[in-house]
Figure (cartoon, rainbow, N blue to C red):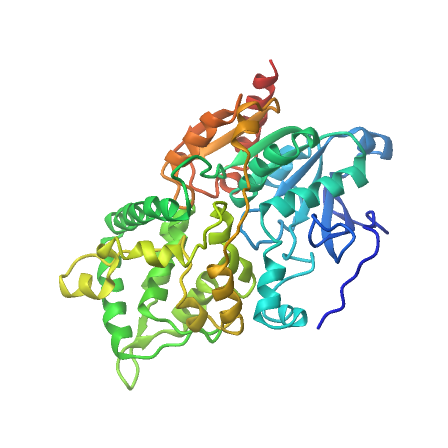
Length: 452
């Protein structure tokens, strides 16, 4: 079992600096408490990368305000930049940018099937991961901020789950914030928005996105039905060792939440079958391309903690998406094929069967079950404090976002005093990447307008 470090939390330590075209990058490492309620206890190490526009002198760089980027997820490391592009290009016009690998992701004490056994058995692993939600990420940010810039506040840009963290930040430590920018990440926070309510709104969105895809590419509906019939009679394994079952196939709908996702799904399905001596089988091209869409090898915390990101009422999540799915019989793929109906796709959900089909999750089965059964999840948001908010906040809400319910987002926007919104159907959930510079520019304009 891994030995706990209990040293006093350290500052950024030795800083390594490298250059890219148009960028100056610096690596930082910070030691922070695993449990912020026990600051003298075990420490974990976090990684962050500073990005500054090349050509800035030392004095110019020191005068720049900071913007910390919180990635979507949960379980995803921060972007790895290669030159100036998109939203980062716009941010570098006026900020020093800090790309933080949130705890458990990227180079920040990664938590996965390889490292978690160092903690002990499933019970120890589940207890460890209970400290990896938005409230802990906010406390990490506050420690890092004070070590880098002292009492000065900074700006936070939260993408998707990073936006959830930003709202938690406004609830816990608004004194650390100069402004908050949120891209597709306003969480459900009000009464009646527990994890089950989140998924009751998710399944109708997934149905709409699926039917819109089939309207664009009608032959894909036939291909998916053929795949369902094929998988009923054949064992198929993807190139990463994961089994492709019918429910796993349906999760290819995960692609439909991005701007080019419908087109990517269509091209994937074009390569579905190949003739063989044993009859039609899944092509190697399809198996190779489907594997990274469905794999959780690089982001296991997404499957382990996604539902926990919505839990704050003390109750167990108990595989909410799986339970709620039973309320939507139209997602029964076998029945859809029998009745010659379109097979509906899913995506923004996790299910217990994934612990068997996904190669990278099989060793974490018991840990995942313990997290799903865990009770006592504490609150992540302070609605009274949000109603008194004085920090300038701007949020882009993507109309009919696959991953984050628009209705819940609008309700949350109304609950945060002074929050300015931009509601658009020009982009899907990945708008901060697809729209890049323009999306961030609009958010910054809204913040300036909020300041008056």
